[in-house]
Structures are given as structure tokens and as C-alpha cells.
Image (cartoon, rainbow, N blue to C red; front, side, top):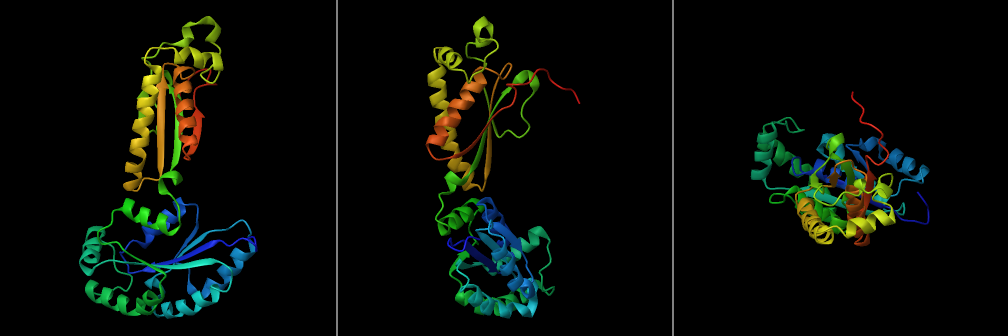
Length: 292
């Protein structure tokens, strides 16, 4: 890590079944270097490792009751780490006993303390109480959806979750099949096809004259605005449900003109609004469909 640049270091712990694993996945979505269930005996060595690798900036470390009685050493280790220059936070996840009992019943997982479930939860609360007392943040997940948990964590990180969503926009040709990774698929074969204009046949929807031709097509501008509005409307809805990746596929017959123009136009609009966009024109350079 750059000694002059402070990275974020989140230690995530809490009651088993309260959502620590899901929280770590969310930190991973926000490009944190995540480690789950690091033995406390290796804690100091882990910090040395992070220090030796300057490309690791933000870290999320999951530690839980699987450490057993050794969990009591965590506060002292946290105190040591606070002197290392990280922007350090201890996040504690909790939920009501009723919710924890239901979650264990639904997943059929055993409690790490391997006792009668309610007894194990009570013992775990006792062991983790000193850690809970020093937590910088506590999130109670009893009534949270996965999307709401992600929103809570994004606020802790001072991140706008909607802008952190990874959005891929793909153009394709229906004659070569649908992209399997698609979440949303839009067919633009209703637009006038530049392929039948000789001067455009060997060009693509990225060429300015082809773009001008498509813009003059009936309904092209209206469609682009309406479809862009739909995508912008849906993005926060998907995020609320915990979705981190969205793939929008736009297709025409061959995947070289109309779909390319529409995909590129959508990508440009979303980029201008601050979204992270991967733009891919699948069939632009495809000579023929390969059969496997």
C-alpha cells in the first residue's frame, strides 16, 4: 500500500446467521480485497502481507465465532492495527434470535459452536459482547433485504451504489444467437436497415454516416429516449434487490448496424451520467457463425 495513501480496512464480524458472508460479498462488489475467517494467529502476518503489497488498498476481513475462545484477542489486535495508518472500521452484524433461528432452519446449516441452536446463539452473544461494544458500526439485518444491506454498506463507504453497478451493453445479431449473459434484451429490427444501402454495407453503427442514416429512421430518436429511460428506471430497482451486474443486449439482424448504433448511444448516455459501462459489439467482426 502507498504509505501516503490511507486505504479502508473493514473488520466484519457479528452473530452467526446475521449476514456476514453476504456483507463480504458486497464489499467484494465494491472492489475490496476480501478474506473470510482469517485465523487470528495469522492476523499480524496478514497486516505485514498487506503492507508489502502496495497494490492492495481497501480490505474487508471477516472474523467470526469459528475462532472460538480466541475471539477475545480481537480487540487488542484491532487496537494494534489502528496504528498502521488504515481508515479502520469494525462492523458488527446482528439479528434477532427469532430471525436467526428461522435462517438456520431454512438453510439447514449447523451453528459453528455445534450446540443446541438457541444455547449456541446465547453463548455466541456472550463471547462477542466485548467486540460488539467497541464496534464503529452495527447493522441489524432482521428486516433487511440483500439490496437494503448493500445500500447500508454503500453509505458506510460513502459510495453511491447505483454508480458502482457494473453495466455491460452488448450489441448482437439475432442470426448468431442471443448473448447468454443477457439480463435485458431489446430487438431493434423495426428500424430501417442500413445494410441494404450499398455504401453502408461494409460499415458499422460506429461510423458517423451510418449513425446519421439511422437517426433519420422513423421512431429512432423516440425509441432511444424511451428505452434509455426504461434502463435508468430499472437500474436502482435491480440494485435494491442486491444485483451488482447488469447486461443489456440490443439486437438487430446481423449485429453490425442498428444494434451497434443503439448500444453505443445508450452506453454514451449512461457514461455521461456517471455509470461504469462496458461496451461490447459482439458481431461487428464476425465473418460467420461457428458451430460447436
